[in-house]
Image (tube, rainbow, N blue to C red):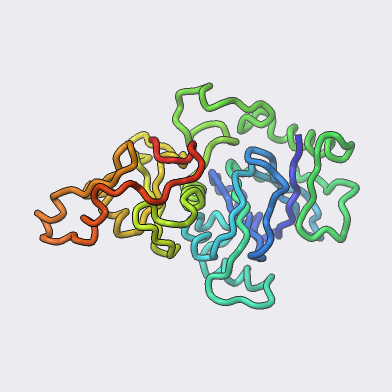
Length: 292
């Protein structure tokens, strides 16, 4: 078992602790560095800067994605550790030498975050170097790593299923409601769907991010899940028509546009051009393709 210990500040911790969020975005101000230290489901821990130098919580790694700041805010909102988009922009600018509008930031997306009360904070491992800027990986094959993971385990106990992962088939409870290491929230759903479709509309091929939405095939309110296969990346106008039943996608990935669009509004020519079209943009991975 291993964990990555990432460095953050007290303001981020204070903003998120006690909120009971199902997901958080541990963002990095630099927009050109990837994060490859963990695989999905592994533990990511939060360590505060000096003078605190303590591990104060963590979460379970889902994905790393480079996103413009506006999309990070639209997807996660206050789960970014700020109260407003303006505050997020100000925090980003604090760590960057130059910044235009909507800078790219690194987003380490975590589910089932947990935060320790101050009395349960864990001191940084003895071998934590002062020169560490981003973070460090620990595993249970070393003395320091084993001690750290045991300390986390003692504080979490069986919470979130930590220490014994089960498969999705172990329960008929729908995704999004159980097993921390498998559950994803609405913000994570949006990012995963966006990436699965290579940041392009499934129907039109549009790639302008501000006008792309992650649509649910089966709404969550109707027992749908936040699974990527229950999603489609659609241009906002197409998404609206999809949600209102004027347009749909068949099980064999063809687009159907309802006659109601013309009969009710006397228009819709640009949308009827998609009728009968096989989706030109599908996820490369079979398990991410539409199948609610």
